[in-house]
Length: 92
Image (cartoon, rainbow, N blue to C red; front, side):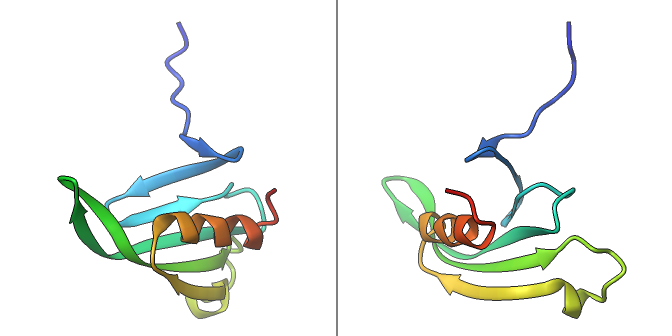
């Protein structure tokens, strides 16, 4: 048996969540997108993100944290944020 764990993927790229932070992309690529859930609301008994901040981040660890952030935006849903993230990472 293979005990190797794999990441959940979206459009072929890893999607990893830790609390209210979601990392989208492959760390071996030049950039990833970090999605931060800023606020949530209850809909049908579950929490749904209604404000998220997205940042395109360089994976080059030699850069300062300020230099690593290439683009940023705020969206009103996780779906919109993933749509923008795909465009930023040029995924169709």
